[in-house]
Image 1 (cartoon, rainbow, N blue to C red):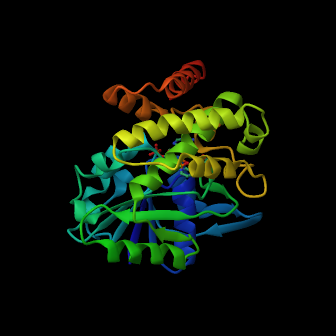
Image 2 (cartoon, rainbow, N blue to C red):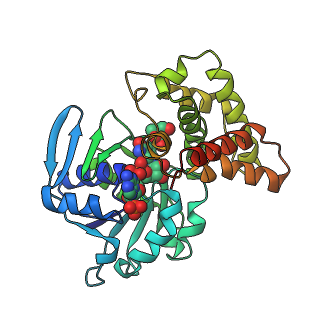
Length: 312
Ligand SMILES: NC(=O)C1=CN([C@@H]2O[C@H](COP(=O)(O)OP(=O)(O)OC[C@H]3O[C@@H](n4cnc5c(N)ncnc54)[C@H](OP(=O)(O)O)[C@@H]3O)[C@@H](O)[C@H]2O)C=CC1
Ligand SMILES: CC(C)(CO)C(=O)C(=O)O
């Protein structure tokens, strides 16, 4: 199976390395020339659970894509705001049989993907794996994780299960979900609390969890996500979701991770995905006439911080 990782930053590199080590034919595609050139020249360097490794994986810039070889599977791992451009750039690698798996954080990416791919080839999901970019061609990977995914098109359950097996055979611990919209809202609750709060407060998840107001903040934000999800026909079990969110506080698992939004904004002064997480809930709240004051404020505070830091 020819797998393209479209967006080979921190997470794309993690999935690329694990799938490559699992014996798959993997190619990385990314738009950052320094990163792509570093991988071409020195291999992809990773600190994997404390061990330094170098993996030689084929890599190309989006501008180098040629249409000669079609992909069997394209795993999307761009930032939300890069998704549309990436889909335009990988169009020539897509045949009528190419499956697309989107594992980005955020809500509603299927609306963008549907513009380019027939529904029966679209698979969506989310992941609790973590990763960090140290610099061009270099990533830091620790801890464990999981993936949940499902087909969007009718009759594609077996293919979704097959994709989960391909990921699991490489150690990615993937499961078929029979209600992926629930899973995506549930994961969005993790990002809608951890990502913005850690970025605003300048802490990792374990440090956030050690503050007294953390629990009340999580409950309030999860309730806003749940109200909007309910209006869209997704009924979140808020108690279970809060427990899931708070499991991220554990320093023995992923608590020491600085969420991807922190890495973008605080470390790299890059624009964030806030408009696809809390910002998406605020917009949906307006649409359904549901008050979402915490999501509104958190979105605005992150945008303030982007301006203060001159994020690009
Ligand atoms: N990191 C994590 O732990 C997790 C992330 N996610 C989600 O996975 C998706 C991908 O995230 P992630 O892998 O963290 O993204 P990264 O920021 O590591 O990489 C995404 C892209 O951003 C660009 N980029 C990143 N850093 C730089 C830089 N310093 N200079 C220039 N370009 C840069 C590159 O593309 P280009 O040059 O084309 O712009 C890169 O492909 C997101 O939706 C995220 O929310 C989900 C779970 C955990
Ligand atoms: C690891 C986790 C779950 C933290 O919110 C994440 O998705 C991210 O860093 O964006």
